[in-house]
Length: 116
Image 1 (cartoon, rainbow, N blue to C red):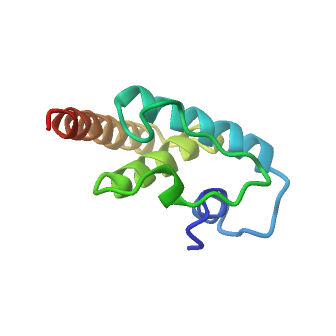
Image 2 (cartoon, one colour; image 1 turned 90 degrees about the vertical axis):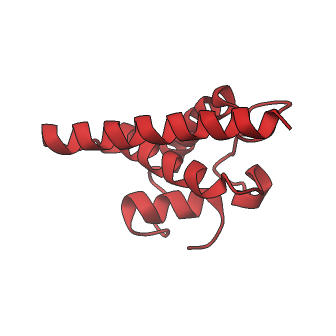
């Protein structure tokens, strides 16, 4: 992984970072996921984080604490569900269940962190 947000998501979703045909779509989905994370209290507090297709923003530009890993995994799964959802209903439900748990954990973490 490159640690650059768009490149990591492309590698996770497409298996390659060289194809840029879907960058615009992926950026839209990534920014949607960042908006959801912002609403959960994860990430910068003053405004929702966003990227552009030509940005080289890194994960540490978004977040630099212990919730980063869950935020990354949530973002990967959320973008995957929008970009190329599973065709099997069992796989779809499993992905939804995992995302629901990650959302719950991110909310709990944000509440815990904000209480200090």
